[in-house]
Length: 601
Image (cartoon, rainbow, N blue to C red; front, side, top):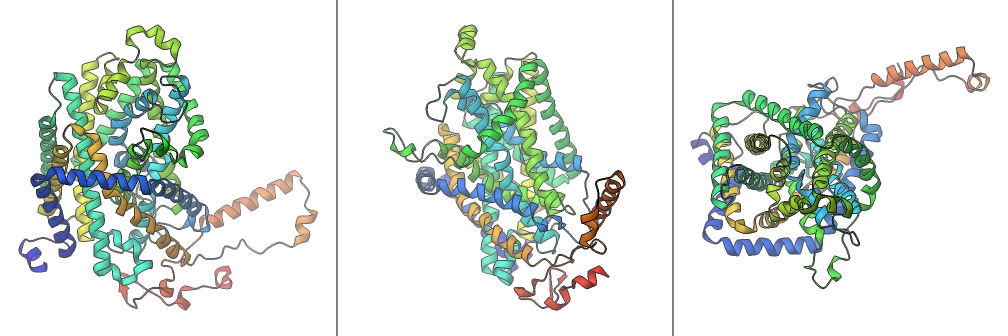
């Protein structure tokens, strides 16, 4: 394999690249030759996974969230994701903007109207009347549960693992590097390569499914604007254009241009949200923002552990219940993006502390998600009619939007904009926003997949990235052809099967991080000489005493800000190498330790 890679002028790991490429090509050919048997196999695999392991997905993401919060609040929260003297490369505002651009823009554009309206018209919780006020509240609660904290938990855990092991120890930019504490130098052997191949393929299929969903939404938008048939041929043509744009960007090296375009695109997406807020029921939406926060926080514990366990006792049940097509699909789809988004988040978070990273990645995008659904979700349901009295007042217009969403989920956003002024212009902008989001995502994903193959943050030869960009487009095209009229259902089947092994890999990142953090040598903190107990007993709450207390707190904060950590933790307990690993020299356990007396001096 090495000789073949060298003859092609590629700079990559020959085993990871070759096996991943061969598997991708074989899969595309198999879809061309025998689409029906493969479709049946994915359907059977998805049915088994959801009915037998759906609880595993739901419980797992909750455990990941608990682990992240515990890690951030522990004594390890001050550790920097990089060398001891590193500091963040970006301001907080720039960092938050890039977080939004990296992982949530495409999802919110697709589901911002579709999901709340789906739950509003067909409530998943028992005993809830469709189109009622209770159905509206549950719809917002469930939509925000799916796309706020828990979605970003799936991105944050691998992001933290990447940032910790790659930024802090200069290990190769590969998923296998995260597992060094568990498998040690075997990350360079067959086991490590198998992990990296699974990550490459999972990312490839996750991006391909997203491109498939994006082509469906763009086709629906063009159909609404020009009356075109939004069938398979139009979707394939859209995928060809998106892939061509990504390839041109790769060949021309338009990285700065793509970044600028992405920032403009984010501005347009936010502009659409502000447009809805101003031109819609402004006061109703402002009140909805406040209430959405309360609904989210109040219903989160119940929804987070809701497992739909009684679904299989119904006479018409298909064996996995409502969550198989929603929650489990979301978690499986999101986790296939986690190597891609996690690596991106790790790169822009170098120099931040673990505490900054966890709370920033979890809270900032989640807050934006709550605002987005507060505006698009509540406005869509108000247009459709919330409650019997409102629907009676609307007359024939009641239910028009929910009927459009039931007919075509990708059409939801464009049917929604028909109720606003300048409908054609706004729909055109929405089509452009979706197209740019998916085109730039394909370009970025090609870079990340290439990095996972090379193990280096520096991009490989252009032809390597072009190969992965074209592969993403081909897989997405064949999945669309395979899906046919089934559309979203077929894509759900594929991504649920592909997501299971990636989900297991991310789960194993928790023990790897625990081992890594446990071997950090955190210096003792001392604040001068400890005062005698009698000083605290005789202290009175007088103004001078309060001033002295303020001064003491000031000194205490200064010392905390000057907390130092060893540049590398004591890996001697399980580190199998005695030399340098990726440029990081190991030290003996004795040389790693510094006594409390040394720190005091």
